[in-house]
Length: 120
Image 1 (cartoon, rainbow, N blue to C red):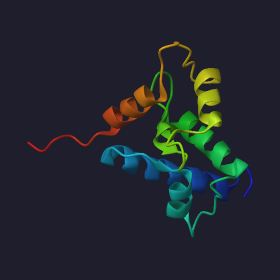
Image 2: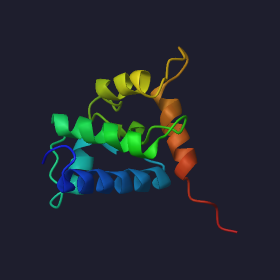
Image 3: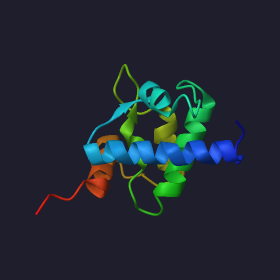
């Protein structure tokens, strides 16, 4: 799969839908679980550079301006935090430079954005 090809776009779009579903559920999960959820139709290794590239593009597509970064929901299985690439993207492209900013705030903002409305 190469950047910009139809398979790449389809994988990115599938990833957006998976992460929006997690957001509606109010949960985070691992890079490995995301990879497994996308398979077998979309093959993205959870340790590969393609995972990072796709998650960055997910944010660019879904999180314009001050909107929270959808990739805040994807965490490392060991430390339960996003990868270094997430934090780099947060600073460089999404201008999360406030010294009090945390990924937990970003995650909670994603949950709030996609929370299912309560039944009336």
